[in-house]
Amino acid sequence: MADGERQLEPSGLADLVESNDLTDMRLWLAEHPPYEIADELARMDSHLAIIPFRLLDKDRELEVFEELDPVHQQEILMGLRDGAFRELLEEMDPDDRARLIGEAPAKIATRALAGLSPAERKMTAALLGYPEGSVGRYMTPETVILHRDLTIARALEVVRAKGADAENIYTLPVVDDGRRLAGTVQLGDLVVSEPDTLIKDVVDVFVPRVQASEPAEDAARLMQQANLVALPVVDSEERFVGILTFDDAIELIEAADSEDIARQSGASPVAGHYVAASVLRLARARSVWLLLLIVASTLTVNVMQGFEATLEEVTALALFVPMLTGTGGNVGSQSATAIVRALAVGEVRLRDLPKVAWKESRVGVVLGIMLAAIALLIGSFLVGVDIAVAVAMSVIAICIWAAVIGSTMPLLARRVGVDPAVVSAPLVSTLVDATGLLIYFTIARAVLGI
Image 1 (cartoon, rainbow, N blue to C red):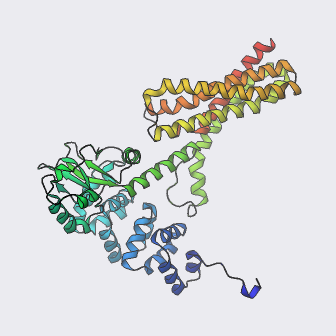
Image 2: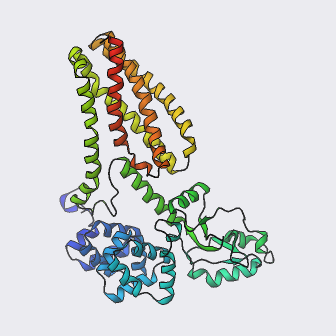
Image 3: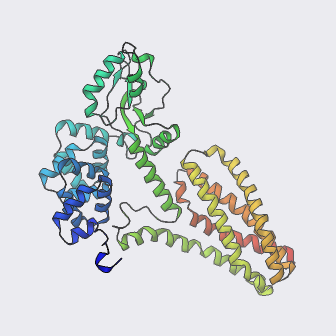
């Protein structure tokens, strides 16, 4: 293709903002869905993101705003005048608004609550009254509630009358006279049932439910496990108070998994978009664990000092230290990662600790034998059979030990109330390095008669 015919790559929203091209900005915003617009805004500095946001019409403005994470929502709100500020918050879903206000600085939270209508303020305050991180903070109270004694025909009339104001009408809670949850009914079941059938004859009484004070992540995992579109939420007396929808459950699981991944890598979670995060902010999130780990790694130095005489007598032993510490660290990290993930999705429980340790020890044996065979072959060629045997035996022992340590530490952390992800792969690796050297030098002394 000739230079004159070469097509230019279309400009992104950030490029249009930088060039202050309002016409093309409006065109770009009209051609892209809300989630893509929100992603572009999250990548920009807050003082730039407010420019295209103000160009959105009212309906799309709310859709884009609700796609943003709370940290970016706060930045957008800070750039709005009072009228636009109040109008945007008033139109938000109650659960999204409560989450935003709950995570916002006091100045923004006070301004937000003061600008709401009495009805919306009361609803938001009720959600904020639940513990932080609980289902109550994430559920929506705006739903269509059906009484168990209604007919199907009457229930459909209620859905038509109130459904426009509800966040979800696909899963409908069914209650008794005391507003206690009797179960749920699917909208599809209402549509295909006979009009004179009673709701109590089609209600699903076995549907899972959670209390509003329970952890939101656990509720989201339950929805994932049970393949639910919505999960009813009740109070301590089984009265219906709200419903957790699948979109909020997905966000909860994504946030929890992101936090676990960050902690497993030895870092603190960073809120907001990676591209928009500053270098200092990212460094600060990673520095704490690195400082702790470098202090912990001095254990390895102490072990090496303790066996200095052994190393002086058989210097060839030092050649295999990196290989053994690396192998032990990798095996331990793999086990720790597998168990943290299994804990997160409910596949492993605290009472499974003996089973987990026994299974992982056998995994360690299998891995150890495989790796020991390679170590024996290479070691025999490089330094002789005696040292190679000591190295091979050490590989097996270290693999078993690393697998057990890596698998049990997350479970023990959960037992004492610590996030299992905090017992991250780097911490397990550092611990296994030091203890693995003890195993290595002890076996080497016994085999070589030092």
